[in-house]
Amino acid sequence: MTLVTEILFGAAAAFITASLVAVYRILRGPTMPDRVVAINVLGSNVVIVIALLAAAIGEPGALDIALVYALLNFLLSITISKFTVDRGEVL
Image (cartoon, rainbow, N blue to C red; front, top):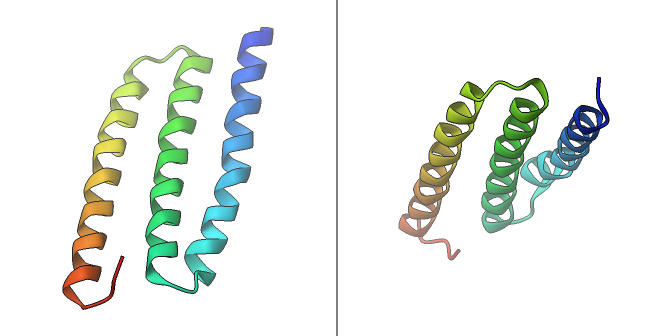
């Protein structure tokens, strides 16, 4: 493995570790906005990890997966926000 590959794998591991904080906030978030932001952060971290791993292993096809996942993450955030507003809670 080259130095660049090791750095990319290390960065991916750091984002995975940071995602654990978001999982905690999803499970223990005191309010719905906290949970919505944590879900968005978790989804963004997944996209970043997929992109880093794609660069590390040299698989450009995985970037398409990351792009689709990013779009789904955006739609999920919008849907949760709309559902929350419709229920009468304030975001």
